[in-house]
Image (cartoon, rainbow, N blue to C red):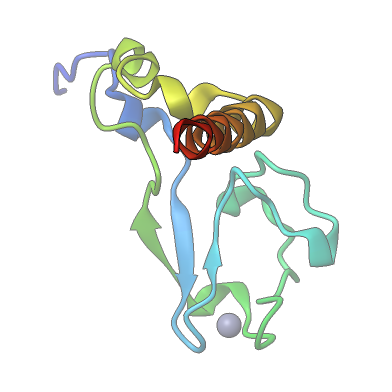
Length: 115
Ligand SMILES: [Zn+2]
């Protein structure tokens, strides 16, 4: 009997990805497999026994567990800090970009007007 703590890190909670040893395709559980209509969030272990690599057709036994990918490695709340621009919608980014260009153009015009 071991006394492993019940709490898991975020990385351990994430589902493991499996890589096809034949072609290098990686099955990512949080994406699923659209070719076999496997919904996102399906663990590799729950794929049907006749599931095959969508790229090369290798059987499930050709896949190896490569662990969780893209798992947050640190504290979840930190993900919301420090990258304000990255959280803008594309529309908001366009406003920033074109607004900046328009300002630069007006600035250029005003200099031209002074001459
Ligand atoms: Zn493959």
